[in-house]
Length: 377
Image (tube, rainbow, N blue to C red; front, side, top):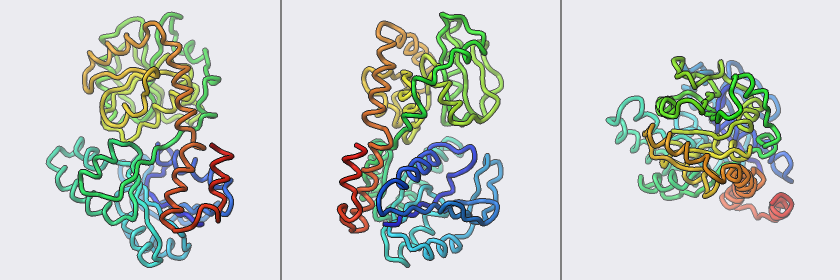
């Protein structure tokens, strides 16, 4: 079976979608009789390692992203590749190209709802845009043969919009890269922290939907004894005395060191469609302080962290203090166990393969899928 993914959500400093696609490509290489192609935007055309880069203009102020303006080159490439299943990862121009290629080839097309477009745009343009964008999401995603949602909250939202062919498909985490053995005391030393100071970390982009002002206000409430280090790009420059930041994007291995070294991950985002960094922290043996909003509550299982009220610095500060009561170290161990058991890529990607087999009408036995599940489960 030949699977083709197409997306604009793939840039040098991009996040969850690229992580998902890279993990998927690595896993599929080891499965029998499976072929994977990936279509991506770039400055110039290239074809390394079954990745097809098509010339695409850069998105102004887009942090390395490129925005396709024409469908036809992408349709032509997909048709030439003749995949058995096509998956589109973003809600802009390329899913329409995927749908057209699927129509010409008469093959199923999957839409993966990684980005909650109405909420994302609403936080920038105002809620006046929600009705228009909700209608757009409905029109687009009702055309797919199947829509995959990375969280149950997103699946419910899509069904409420009238998108019927929705299935819950969680994402995973690299439990070898994100591991407690990456703990590095030198990172604490580089911040000049006392031994009894609690090191909190947030990792990700400094985007509006991450609600970083909530974290900064919570740190002012927490005061001495707590230090927050912001790991990632586009972080605020004006920070309280007990907050520091990296100078830009860090490679995944560096992020893994910070997550394993932290006493807790703190995350105030209440609009996450999944929340990959939460799983990365849990796999690193680090408990989580999140909020009751978006998909985060689905990941923070009992005993692996605590949840605060959304958009409340006081609740975030209070919940962070509560985390470090008796049993805090046990939370980290439980977080690691939960992430490995339920969200290792070897656990979730066979579920994804089931969707493809079902849609393409290709029996599992023809490709050894059952054997794959037994050997990787």
